[in-house]
Image (cartoon, rainbow, N blue to C red; front, side, top):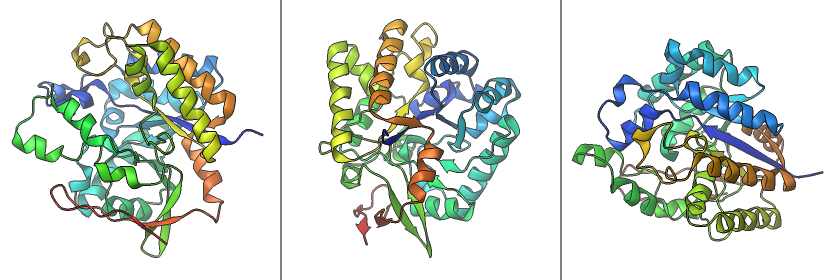
Length: 332
Protein backbone atom coordinates (compact mmCIF):
# COMPACT_ATOMS: atom_id res chain seq x y z
CA UNK A 1 0.00 0.00 0.00
CA UNK A 2 1.17 3.52 -0.77
CA UNK A 3 1.68 5.90 2.16
CA UNK A 4 -0.93 8.65 2.52
CA UNK A 5 -0.36 12.21 1.31
CA UNK A 6 -2.78 15.12 1.02
CA UNK A 7 -3.56 17.81 -1.51
CA UNK A 8 -5.25 21.16 -0.95
CA UNK A 9 -6.00 24.40 -2.75
CA UNK A 10 -6.19 27.77 -1.00
CA UNK A 11 -9.09 29.39 -2.85
CA UNK A 12 -7.71 32.92 -2.58
CA UNK A 13 -9.75 35.17 -4.84
CA UNK A 14 -8.57 38.05 -7.01
CA UNK A 15 -9.63 40.69 -4.46
CA UNK A 16 -7.66 38.96 -1.68
CA UNK A 17 -4.43 39.08 -3.72
CA UNK A 18 -5.12 42.76 -4.47
CA UNK A 19 -5.85 43.50 -0.80
CA UNK A 20 -2.61 41.97 0.47
CA UNK A 21 -0.68 43.70 -2.32
CA UNK A 22 -2.17 47.10 -1.41
CA UNK A 23 -4.00 47.57 -4.73
CA UNK A 24 -6.93 49.98 -4.96
CA UNK A 25 -10.36 48.55 -5.75
CA UNK A 26 -9.98 45.28 -3.88
CA UNK A 27 -13.08 46.07 -1.82
CA UNK A 28 -15.30 45.55 -4.85
CA UNK A 29 -14.49 41.85 -4.28
CA UNK A 30 -13.52 41.16 -7.86
CA UNK A 31 -13.81 37.41 -8.45
CA UNK A 32 -12.52 34.78 -10.85
CA UNK A 33 -14.21 31.86 -9.06
CA UNK A 34 -16.66 31.32 -11.92
CA UNK A 35 -13.65 30.67 -14.18
CA UNK A 36 -11.18 28.84 -11.96
CA UNK A 37 -13.51 26.53 -10.01
CA UNK A 38 -14.95 24.68 -13.05
CA UNK A 39 -11.44 24.48 -14.55
CA UNK A 40 -9.95 22.97 -11.39
CA UNK A 41 -12.86 20.58 -10.84
CA UNK A 42 -12.57 19.24 -14.40
CA UNK A 43 -8.80 18.91 -13.99
CA UNK A 44 -9.18 16.92 -10.74
CA UNK A 45 -12.05 14.78 -12.01
CA UNK A 46 -10.00 13.70 -15.02
CA UNK A 47 -7.36 12.40 -12.61
CA UNK A 48 -9.75 10.93 -10.05
CA UNK A 49 -8.48 13.20 -7.28
CA UNK A 50 -10.37 14.52 -4.25
CA UNK A 51 -8.76 17.40 -2.36
CA UNK A 52 -9.45 20.10 0.24
CA UNK A 53 -10.45 23.61 -0.81
CA UNK A 54 -9.76 26.22 1.87
CA UNK A 55 -12.50 28.79 1.25
CA UNK A 56 -12.55 32.46 2.26
CA UNK A 57 -15.73 33.36 4.15
CA UNK A 58 -16.19 36.72 2.41
CA UNK A 59 -16.49 34.92 -0.93
CA UNK A 60 -19.00 32.47 0.50
CA UNK A 61 -21.07 35.37 1.86
CA UNK A 62 -21.60 36.83 -1.63
CA UNK A 63 -24.52 35.40 -3.58
CA UNK A 64 -22.66 35.63 -6.90
CA UNK A 65 -20.11 33.02 -5.70
CA UNK A 66 -22.58 30.53 -4.27
CA UNK A 67 -22.93 28.36 -7.39
CA UNK A 68 -19.19 27.94 -7.81
CA UNK A 69 -18.60 27.12 -4.14
CA UNK A 70 -21.53 24.72 -3.91
CA UNK A 71 -19.91 22.72 -6.71
CA UNK A 72 -16.94 21.81 -4.47
CA UNK A 73 -18.60 19.36 -2.05
CA UNK A 74 -20.97 18.27 -4.82
CA UNK A 75 -17.88 16.95 -6.62
CA UNK A 76 -16.74 15.09 -3.48
CA UNK A 77 -14.17 17.55 -2.18
CA UNK A 78 -13.57 18.68 1.40
CA UNK A 79 -14.06 22.34 2.36
CA UNK A 80 -11.86 24.06 4.95
CA UNK A 81 -11.90 27.48 6.61
CA UNK A 82 -9.46 30.09 5.25
CA UNK A 83 -10.75 32.92 7.51
CA UNK A 84 -13.46 35.45 6.64
CA UNK A 85 -11.51 38.57 5.56
CA UNK A 86 -8.31 36.86 4.39
CA UNK A 87 -5.93 39.08 6.33
CA UNK A 88 -2.42 37.58 6.68
CA UNK A 89 -2.02 39.55 9.91
CA UNK A 90 -4.52 37.28 11.70
CA UNK A 91 -1.91 36.77 14.44
CA UNK A 92 -2.59 40.37 15.55
CA UNK A 93 -6.27 39.66 16.28
CA UNK A 94 -7.60 39.47 19.84
CA UNK A 95 -9.39 36.33 21.00
CA UNK A 96 -12.81 37.98 20.58
CA UNK A 97 -11.88 39.12 17.07
CA UNK A 98 -10.75 35.61 16.15
CA UNK A 99 -13.94 34.07 17.50
CA UNK A 100 -15.97 36.44 15.32
CA UNK A 101 -13.71 35.91 12.30
CA UNK A 102 -13.97 32.13 12.40
CA UNK A 103 -17.68 32.11 13.22
CA UNK A 104 -18.53 34.43 10.32
CA UNK A 105 -16.48 32.26 7.95
CA UNK A 106 -18.04 29.04 9.23
CA UNK A 107 -21.56 30.37 8.86
CA UNK A 108 -20.98 31.73 5.35
CA UNK A 109 -19.16 28.59 4.15
CA UNK A 110 -21.85 26.32 5.59
CA UNK A 111 -24.62 28.36 3.95
CA UNK A 112 -22.86 28.31 0.57
CA UNK A 113 -21.68 24.71 0.51
CA UNK A 114 -23.72 22.77 3.07
CA UNK A 115 -20.37 21.72 4.59
CA UNK A 116 -19.23 22.97 8.01
CA UNK A 117 -15.43 23.11 8.05
CA UNK A 118 -13.38 21.33 10.72
CA UNK A 119 -9.97 22.22 9.29
CA UNK A 120 -8.29 25.62 9.15
CA UNK A 121 -5.47 27.33 7.28
CA UNK A 122 -4.53 30.90 8.14
CA UNK A 123 -4.03 33.35 5.26
CA UNK A 124 -0.35 33.94 4.54
CA UNK A 125 0.50 31.10 7.00
CA UNK A 126 -0.53 33.39 9.88
CA UNK A 127 -0.80 31.58 13.20
CA UNK A 128 -0.75 32.44 16.92
CA UNK A 129 -1.33 30.82 20.28
CA UNK A 130 -4.68 32.62 20.41
CA UNK A 131 -5.70 31.18 17.04
CA UNK A 132 -4.88 27.66 18.22
CA UNK A 133 -6.89 28.19 21.41
CA UNK A 134 -9.90 29.44 19.45
CA UNK A 135 -9.66 26.52 16.99
CA UNK A 136 -9.80 24.05 19.89
CA UNK A 137 -12.73 25.88 21.46
CA UNK A 138 -14.60 25.74 18.17
CA UNK A 139 -14.03 22.00 17.71
CA UNK A 140 -11.55 21.97 14.81
CA UNK A 141 -9.86 18.67 14.03
CA UNK A 142 -6.68 20.09 12.54
CA UNK A 143 -4.73 23.20 11.62
CA UNK A 144 -2.69 23.46 8.40
CA UNK A 145 -1.26 26.97 8.70
CA UNK A 146 2.48 26.38 9.02
CA UNK A 147 5.10 26.49 6.26
CA UNK A 148 8.42 25.24 7.72
CA UNK A 149 10.91 27.09 5.53
CA UNK A 150 13.75 29.54 6.04
CA UNK A 151 12.99 31.66 2.98
CA UNK A 152 9.89 33.50 4.23
CA UNK A 153 11.71 36.86 4.57
CA UNK A 154 13.08 36.50 1.02
CA UNK A 155 9.61 35.79 -0.39
CA UNK A 156 8.24 38.75 1.57
CA UNK A 157 10.93 41.11 0.25
CA UNK A 158 10.24 39.94 -3.32
CA UNK A 159 6.51 40.54 -2.81
CA UNK A 160 7.00 43.99 -1.25
CA UNK A 161 9.08 45.10 -4.23
CA UNK A 162 5.95 45.52 -6.33
CA UNK A 163 3.45 46.25 -3.52
CA UNK A 164 1.81 49.61 -2.89
CA UNK A 165 1.87 49.74 0.91
CA UNK A 166 2.07 52.55 3.43
CA UNK A 167 3.96 52.20 6.73
CA UNK A 168 0.96 50.82 8.63
CA UNK A 169 0.21 48.27 5.92
CA UNK A 170 3.83 47.14 5.89
CA UNK A 171 3.70 46.72 9.66
CA UNK A 172 0.57 44.57 9.37
CA UNK A 173 2.25 42.44 6.72
CA UNK A 174 5.62 42.22 8.47
CA UNK A 175 5.16 38.48 9.10
CA UNK A 176 3.78 37.66 5.62
CA UNK A 177 5.13 34.22 4.56
CA UNK A 178 6.71 33.79 8.02
CA UNK A 179 10.14 34.33 9.53
CA UNK A 180 13.51 32.60 9.30
CA UNK A 181 12.75 30.74 12.53
CA UNK A 182 9.79 29.01 10.88
CA UNK A 183 12.36 26.80 9.20
CA UNK A 184 13.12 25.24 12.59
CA UNK A 185 9.68 23.65 12.77
CA UNK A 186 9.13 20.01 11.74
CA UNK A 187 8.00 19.32 8.17
CA UNK A 188 5.96 16.32 9.32
CA UNK A 189 2.77 16.28 11.39
CA UNK A 190 2.74 16.95 15.12
CA UNK A 191 0.38 18.11 17.84
CA UNK A 192 0.19 21.55 19.40
CA UNK A 193 -0.26 21.58 23.17
CA UNK A 194 -3.31 23.78 23.81
CA UNK A 195 -4.39 23.99 27.44
CA UNK A 196 -5.27 20.50 28.62
CA UNK A 197 -5.66 19.10 25.09
CA UNK A 198 -3.85 19.05 21.74
CA UNK A 199 -4.56 20.04 18.15
CA UNK A 200 -3.08 18.30 15.12
CA UNK A 201 -0.81 20.43 12.93
CA UNK A 202 -0.37 19.26 9.36
CA UNK A 203 2.24 21.60 7.81
CA UNK A 204 2.43 22.53 4.16
CA UNK A 205 5.34 20.26 3.29
CA UNK A 206 8.76 21.59 2.35
CA UNK A 207 11.72 19.58 1.07
CA UNK A 208 13.32 17.44 3.77
CA UNK A 209 16.62 18.75 5.17
CA UNK A 210 16.89 21.93 3.07
CA UNK A 211 13.27 22.99 3.75
CA UNK A 212 12.68 24.90 0.55
CA UNK A 213 9.05 25.17 -0.61
CA UNK A 214 7.75 22.51 -2.98
CA UNK A 215 4.18 23.62 -3.53
CA UNK A 216 3.13 23.96 -7.12
CA UNK A 217 3.40 27.75 -7.42
CA UNK A 218 7.16 27.41 -6.89
CA UNK A 219 7.36 24.73 -9.59
CA UNK A 220 5.61 27.06 -12.01
CA UNK A 221 8.12 29.80 -11.25
CA UNK A 222 10.94 27.36 -12.01
CA UNK A 223 9.21 26.13 -15.15
CA UNK A 224 9.39 29.65 -16.59
CA UNK A 225 13.14 29.06 -16.83
CA UNK A 226 13.20 25.31 -17.41
CA UNK A 227 10.34 22.77 -17.33
CA UNK A 228 12.95 20.02 -16.97
CA UNK A 229 14.39 21.72 -13.88
CA UNK A 230 10.92 22.06 -12.34
CA UNK A 231 10.27 18.34 -12.88
CA UNK A 232 13.64 17.37 -11.41
CA UNK A 233 13.04 19.64 -8.41
CA UNK A 234 9.68 18.06 -7.61
CA UNK A 235 10.90 14.51 -8.29
CA UNK A 236 13.75 15.11 -5.83
CA UNK A 237 11.31 16.45 -3.23
CA UNK A 238 8.93 13.49 -3.53
CA UNK A 239 11.80 11.02 -3.33
CA UNK A 240 13.17 12.82 -0.26
CA UNK A 241 9.75 12.68 1.41
CA UNK A 242 9.53 8.92 0.80
CA UNK A 243 13.03 8.38 2.23
CA UNK A 244 12.24 10.58 5.26
CA UNK A 245 8.94 8.81 5.93
CA UNK A 246 6.93 12.02 5.39
CA UNK A 247 3.51 11.84 3.77
CA UNK A 248 3.55 15.27 2.11
CA UNK A 249 0.75 17.81 2.22
CA UNK A 250 1.01 19.60 -1.12
CA UNK A 251 -0.52 23.00 -1.78
CA UNK A 252 -2.16 24.44 -4.90
CA UNK A 253 -3.40 27.98 -5.60
CA UNK A 254 -5.94 29.33 -8.10
CA UNK A 255 -3.19 31.11 -10.06
CA UNK A 256 -1.72 27.68 -10.84
CA UNK A 257 -4.76 27.27 -13.12
CA UNK A 258 -5.06 30.81 -14.49
CA UNK A 259 -3.15 32.57 -17.24
CA UNK A 260 -2.37 36.27 -17.61
CA UNK A 261 -5.28 36.62 -20.03
CA UNK A 262 -7.66 35.31 -17.35
CA UNK A 263 -6.59 37.90 -14.77
CA UNK A 264 -4.24 40.60 -16.04
CA UNK A 265 -4.51 42.58 -12.77
CA UNK A 266 -2.31 39.95 -11.11
CA UNK A 267 0.48 40.04 -13.66
CA UNK A 268 2.88 41.02 -10.83
CA UNK A 269 2.56 37.56 -9.27
CA UNK A 270 5.45 35.10 -9.90
CA UNK A 271 4.63 32.59 -12.62
CA UNK A 272 1.88 34.62 -14.28
CA UNK A 273 4.03 35.04 -17.39
CA UNK A 274 3.96 31.26 -17.94
CA UNK A 275 1.47 30.36 -20.71
CA UNK A 276 -1.64 28.64 -19.40
CA UNK A 277 -1.10 25.40 -21.32
CA UNK A 278 2.40 25.07 -19.93
CA UNK A 279 1.09 25.80 -16.45
CA UNK A 280 -1.52 23.06 -16.67
CA UNK A 281 1.04 20.61 -18.00
CA UNK A 282 3.39 21.40 -15.10
CA UNK A 283 0.59 20.90 -12.58
CA UNK A 284 -0.41 17.65 -14.29
CA UNK A 285 3.17 16.37 -14.20
CA UNK A 286 3.55 17.24 -10.50
CA UNK A 287 0.33 15.47 -9.54
CA UNK A 288 1.27 12.44 -11.63
CA UNK A 289 4.59 12.21 -9.75
CA UNK A 290 2.80 12.65 -6.42
CA UNK A 291 0.14 10.01 -7.07
CA UNK A 292 2.73 7.56 -8.35
CA UNK A 293 4.34 7.47 -4.90
CA UNK A 294 1.48 8.31 -2.53
CA UNK A 295 -2.21 7.68 -1.89
CA UNK A 296 -3.42 11.27 -2.28
CA UNK A 297 -6.43 12.33 -0.21
CA UNK A 298 -8.10 15.49 1.13
CA UNK A 299 -6.37 17.02 4.13
CA UNK A 300 -9.21 16.05 6.46
CA UNK A 301 -8.84 12.36 5.62
CA UNK A 302 -5.07 12.59 6.04
CA UNK A 303 -5.63 14.32 9.39
CA UNK A 304 -8.12 11.66 10.53
CA UNK A 305 -5.48 8.97 10.01
CA UNK A 306 -2.88 10.99 11.85
CA UNK A 307 -5.25 11.72 14.74
CA UNK A 308 -5.41 7.96 15.39
CA UNK A 309 -1.67 7.86 15.99
CA UNK A 310 -0.26 8.12 19.50
CA UNK A 311 3.38 8.65 18.54
CA UNK A 312 3.23 12.21 17.20
CA UNK A 313 5.44 14.82 18.84
CA UNK A 314 3.70 17.39 21.03
CA UNK A 315 4.90 20.98 20.56
CA UNK A 316 4.45 23.93 22.91
CA UNK A 317 3.40 26.92 20.77
CA UNK A 318 5.37 30.12 21.25
CA UNK A 319 4.59 33.02 18.96
CA UNK A 320 5.26 36.73 19.28
CA UNK A 321 3.85 39.81 17.61
CA UNK A 322 5.95 41.44 14.86
CA UNK A 323 8.89 43.29 16.29
CA UNK A 324 9.20 41.10 19.37
CA UNK A 325 11.85 38.39 19.51
CA UNK A 326 10.51 34.98 18.44
CA UNK A 327 11.28 31.84 20.38
CA UNK A 328 11.41 28.45 18.69
CA UNK A 329 8.81 25.85 19.67
CA UNK A 330 9.80 23.44 22.42
CA UNK A 331 8.84 19.76 22.28
CA UNK A 332 7.94 17.38 25.05
